[in-house]
Amino acid sequence: MVETAVDTLIALRGLAVHFPVLSGLLGRRQIGTVHAVDGVNLEIRRGETLGLVGESGCGKSTLGRAMLRLVRATAGQVYFDGIELTALSDEELRPLRRRMQMVFQDPLSSLNPRMTVGETVSEPMRVHGLAGVVESHVRATELLRTVGLNPDMLNRFPHEFSGGQRQRVGIARALAAEPDFIVCDEPVSALDVSIQAQIINLFEALRDRLGLTYVFIAHDLAVVRHLSDRIAVMYLGQIVEIAPKQTLYATPLHPYTQALLSAAPVPDRALEAARRQRIALQGDAPSPLHPPIGCRLHPRCPKARANCRVVAPMLRQQEEGHWVACHLYD
Image 1 (cartoon, rainbow, N blue to C red):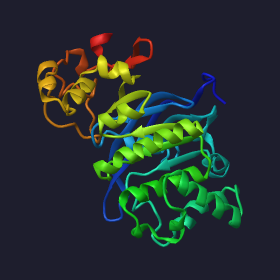
Image 2: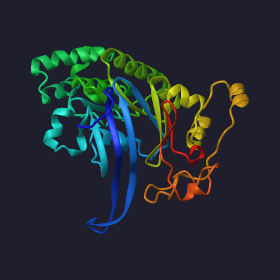
Image 3: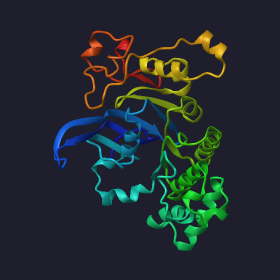
Image 4: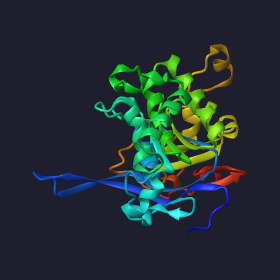
């Protein structure tokens, strides 16, 4: 067990996930390492929704999977309700699997095409010993109603559904195990805009009704703002800023966060022109194979200083609940 705040459900301590790059005919020679996640410290409170944002390839999905130990950590620890997941064997981890679930980005590829919706939703209950065959079928019917689907669809296969309906099935499957914590990995990015709002409202209603804790991974800053209590900004494998959503959107501190928000579209063009100045980062993001020394943003940052090139900034609290990793605030 680890000493954390009473209301903390998930705690990450120096979490790192590195992937070897192999070469050779049989792929036996390691020629490099991808630093997908590098030294993340984070706490998630019970009942809150933490939004996780950043550009493609920054390590958001890997971090979400590492929280559930769907990928193994290279270093650091993941604590769930005070229990260190990274120290458990697969057999010891199995009872906790029920309490941690994931909703995947692509609802079609994450569903078994050979299983009906009823079988897909019922399976977690039987695997974890929550219900027998008859009871799980009844419960699956209730879950379809909960996510806004007609129970008559139980005997249909995934290809017979629309994208939004398939995502609802994925949510029902995650709820079937009666979890406390759900990682939502860009669950609306593959859906039509007209369907996205419905799924987001469903997530919000389920959180309020069931007391769920979410990590919501997304590119769309408007989606994250609507659903999240706090937002963590990730860049090249590291968390660079964490704050309550109102604080982050009103007073972003990190240059990367400022650039992200300045690039987000605003419906009122006149308001956008009057109040916002676009902040452009230089060049492309460096490769996680060879992350820069010092601050990882410094090759692109318009505010970089000399020490940014040699010293990595620590994540420090600037005001209540607002943390930033930037030498501008040392």
